[in-house]
Image 1 (cartoon, one colour):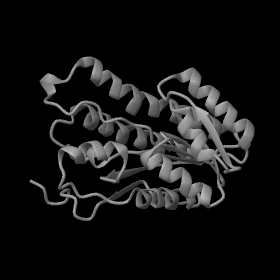
Image 2 (cartoon, one colour):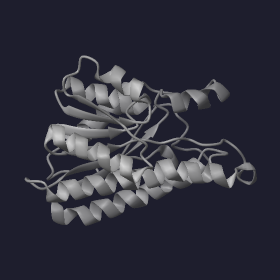
Image 3 (cartoon, one colour):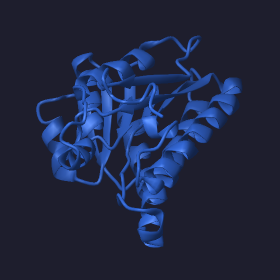
Amino acid sequence: MTSILITGASSGIGRATAEAFLAEGWTVGLVARRAERLREIAAGQGKAIPLPADVSDPGAMQAAFDQFIGEAGRLDVLFNNAGIFGPSASPDEVRVEDFDQVMAVNLRGMFIAARLAFAQMRRQSPQGGRIINNGSISAHVPRENSICYTTSKHAVTGLTRSLSLDGRAFDIACGQIDIGNAESELVADLKARQPDMQTMDVADAARSVLHMAQLPLSANVQFMTVMATRMPYIGRG
């Protein structure tokens, strides 16, 4: 496997993952809305392909996939990473529009990318590939005042399971990485409100994605949890 498309590639976990794969010699498609960030990452990297697009826009994502396949020849791995946290508020204080926005990126966007990747992997020769969805610790247990994000990430787990099941016939493996408190822009916003928050280097999350992607298609990490060791996840009441 030598080609990967990464959504949410302009910062945080997505950027760190892109840099890790480029260092290993992979052809890397960089999908995000901020074109200038993508060009910055791709500068001097012959195997980096900037693909500015909004993951919730089916037409833009189709164009991004078409360009990537045109240049890379095939798609071995999709890292379905793009996501936003949304408002941190009591459920009754969350606007419906804000809930919809989180669902549009975290769930609709992830489905759009997975759908396009599945179609490509099903028809390419040799057939098959791997889809890695970025879940979250919030796919298991919520933070306070995180109803939008938590709902979306629980749904991602259902998406992962369905893709894994439906992909068997086509040699398409699907797994999910649930990352806790990697030092991304999203976590930085939370840490500003909780200065004692335990975090880990975002590069550790990226190396975990690389491990999942480098497995042969005969093996699959179905679910992986990687988090700051002292994060209060295990044992919280």
